[in-house]
Length: 385
Image 1 (spheres, helix red, strand yellow):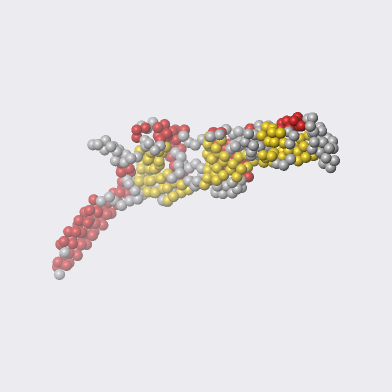
Image 2: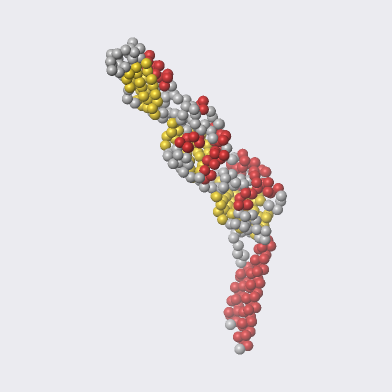
């Protein structure tokens, strides 16, 4: 029985010396992990601890995605050209002023040629005209060129050229749309929402859909929700543009001393840290360490370099594990949190206060003391018998 009592004492003592149970590390442990060892000078953990301040906010604002208008400009319907291009399919009609001409008969004074596709050299072939360049000309200019070629061969020829399939003046819409494909542009000029609507619209909710536009090697990206809400992002498209819609539901996770732990979707295209904390129900008054609000993110090196951090501390991969710290005991921190924008897959962690950790320890200590007293009483009773 004495041996059992000794084992019980040992278990209680080991429990008191162990790490207290919790949902995550303490604020002190997080900060200490990023500090160099006093003896070796090496860090205990491979991440950066960065306070949220004006310097980091300025760097993040400078490197925010530009969007469509900042990348390409608003554009104009005048930028559209109905010039014929390689791959276009043309219809050519010809009339003569008298019977028994080169193409006319007593029954019919007009001739319709089969559809002609502009070859890769930009040419088409017409009987009695031969090979003639079409690419680069408007339909009106091409029909005048054909008419001149027929002078002296046909009787007062009149020519009409129509573009049946306008490949050169089209855009490609692909990805998460209901009817992906190639869409011809109208003469009035089309904006990006016009061609998305022609493709049947997005197959996923607007706030979860990203729109990429590629033009002559340059790429711009913007959320569909922002394009809808902000008319300046609804830019004019140009022939040859490639538009791709992708389903990209963005989320963040909150845990620790917050009221509602869990994963949350972005409810708009821009969510601030302050809004994210509010979505999680705010900090728990009886548990949270308001000075230990942490945001975990793989931050882009270009932002960290722009904010003045030593390139030697950054990862070669182009992103560095970073923990941003916000002390919400200070009133100015609320303005900082309002300006700090969340990214997809960010993690918010609110550490417990020192008082909460102490309370846990005392609770564990009281449980251990009560267990020992109970066991001693049991031993005494058994010894008395």
